[in-house]
Length: 69
Image (cartoon, rainbow, N blue to C red; front, top):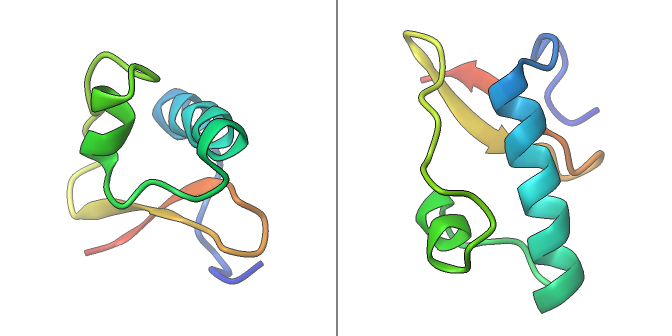
């Protein structure tokens, strides 16, 4: 895992991970930013990470994780 200690999957992380996977399947690339998932219709809105955190895509696992800002 590229982001050791990134924590467990929350519902928001899981939803984003699924959206990123569908986006990647369709476009053969990762989204440039989270807004691109909304624009492409994969999610309705961008969930908020926990306070002091930000979402990131782990390049090894392709799972969305929350990291410190």
